[in-house]
Image 1 (cartoon, rainbow, N blue to C red):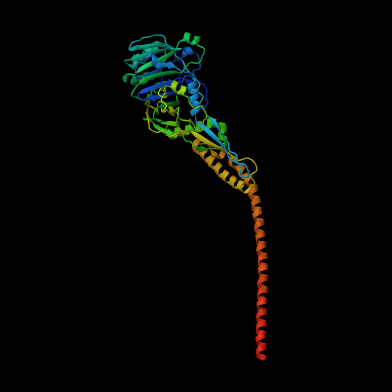
Image 2 (image 1 turned 90 degrees about the vertical axis):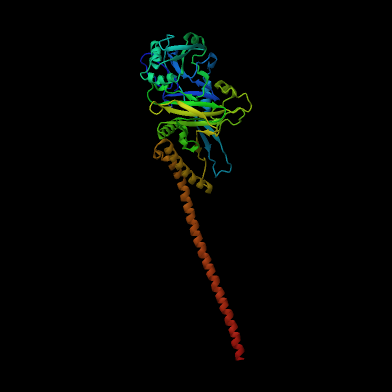
Length: 476
């Protein structure tokens, strides 16, 4: 991502600043926490380093010469907490049985959090070389820190080369814009003696703080010697509103979509396919929104649903949110996901704080069908609705991932089979009722005909009797 890891020898660099060790989810993935308050920026760089610590080093462009008090280490769990809390998630719900007298509803959640496993190599031997000036030198926990300035990219490249760093062929053209903009270079390596004395062998994440009018992340150094795409998760905190990228389009990931039940068993694979498809639709040039929420201490609702522990005050302070001591303080959190490469991201990432405080979560909904006997009128109607819903879920799956929905015929077919005997039974019952209705109508017709017959007969008899009386009267 936004800084360059330098490697001795012929080993290749393959990531944002370190390489991902396995292929779980995103092959090359890194995380960074950004805090922006006024023109103050605090940047924390995750460092789940795996490998020999003597081979680790990094270079970060910074706008000013940092003071010792502006550089610190933090515990890795700050990333674990925020990543678990904001990760794309699936919410599971359960339909109730409409034929059952008791309605039961339940809900639980599965979380998906990218696993970051990293490794890298570098070394440092000299303090000075032509064209390069050491502006400051610090010892910060297990790290030795240098702040360098340079007058030309070639001079900085030679300094790094002569001090044992393997510089990529294209590093000079990437360094040159930073030098022309008078940026400094934060260089960190591990002090082996101090690291050996520590109780924790894992390298600590580094945090830097500075004031600058520009709210940005320099990612071009990380692409100087990288092959292929790299994924970066950005956790941003502000005191106002949501963070968006200004020089690349910020795109919402699909959310609150009903997906098939089996997605729960392979959610990581599903989400990776969904992200890949969104990335391609955006032409490989988007910055994707995965989460946004008000995590202020005064806000009682920190997520909906929660798939991880919401950030507590101490975590927010550690990240750099030093304004939360104010009871009315606002802390707006934004999670952005960037997949970048040299071709599609020729510029660093520039951001703005918007007034938008709308809640957003990358959530996918799974509804488990009702269990038990469904052989009732409401149950049969439920099955018809369920079949339509499942067909819609398969269509959504195809739209999100590009997977072939026809490969899951049983997902809908099993409920069509379940409904079939109910419909046959209903058809038979309807046929019997129809026949019964016809018999009743025939009986009614017979009964009605008899009534008419006797009514007519009675009427004729009355008339005959009446006229007979008249005839007798005349004859008398």
